[in-house]
Image (tube, rainbow, N blue to C red; front, side, top):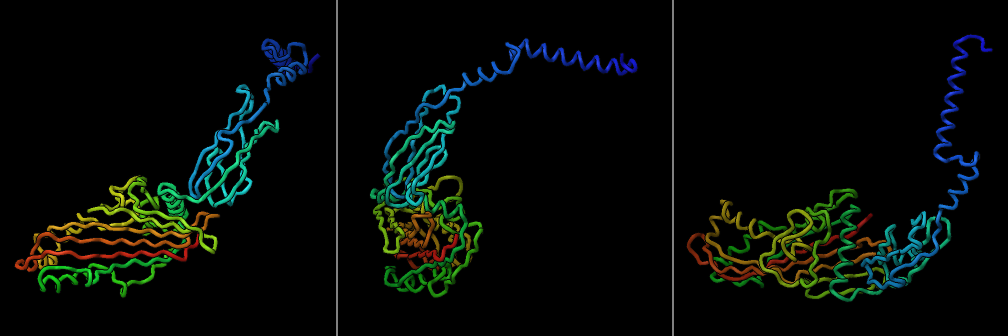
Amino acid sequence: MPKNETEGNFIMKKALSAFFALAFVVQLGLFSTGSTESVITAYAAAKVAVASVKLTPSAIKLAAGNTGTVKATVSPSTATNKAVSWKSSNTAVVTVSSNGTVTALSIGTATITCTAKDGSGKKAVCKATVVSPTTPAQILAAYTTVMNKAKASKPAYKKIEYQTLPTKDQHMEGSVVAKLLPQANRFMTTKDEVKTENNAKGSDMKWFPLYKASKGCLLKNANAIKTASFAKLPNGNYKITIVLKNEVNPEPYKSGNSAPSNVGAMFDPIEKASIDDTLKNDSAVKILISDAKYSLTYMNCTAVLEYNPKTNRVVSLEQNMSTFINITAGKVLHMFSCVGTAMLYNKLKVWDVKY
């Protein structure tokens, strides 16, 4: 007999609780034979192992700097665990992501292995071959990959940028106009004035092409390319040279994930609207030039990129823009006709890049 009524009630409650819990479990069928053996047996029977893994394609060929996708199919479709892992036999040639995206880095071959994660040991392989990019689209893709990585990585780098307006490339009507044109130098950074900019690691990369953009290249239209070349250098680095077709009054990048012009998707051209604003609102400029009508043709804009293919890191970058200025009407000092042409050259150089 319990020592007192309270203790007896407590023992009774525990007994009833255990009884009801056991009855509930039996009703659910978890202990159909009165032991845990049937539960373990049932679970083991329900587990379906992976029988095979198939990759599509079984061989992939990519140009350096480009990406592709390998798809894994796990059989049977009823397999309990269909998760897979990916591995490249040579990560200096290609890397592969958890969803089968293959990134080609350097020329060579590698084996991509996809393995089932259920412990069955089932796997499949895909041979990856990386070749030199040859088409403008392939070369542009390689350039874009490296430039976008630089923007995201925020390395330290040194940079200079300057403009020149050579007298030999000025063809203006009238001696007065010819003498006044060099006044444009006061709006430029000349080669003699340029100073090296030291940009620290982790800086906002605003001044790294593209200006203010989160990407280093937004050009998608390979038809905008006049010529493109790819070369392997003696030091093992790769060199890309891209020259764009001429474009009249191209606008620079402004915002979002695209640029309003082809030149503006790779370079930082001067916006005609900003020049018009200066002509209209700058008091000193208004005295010199009025009623100007002109166009800016960006010619043979060239980007030369050297990078390390094992890491896709920039070694150096040069961007050169040649702008043909064609003035069809205007007045100098409100009395002399201003008609003629000139060439403005812009040079940007980035080097000593440290990630």
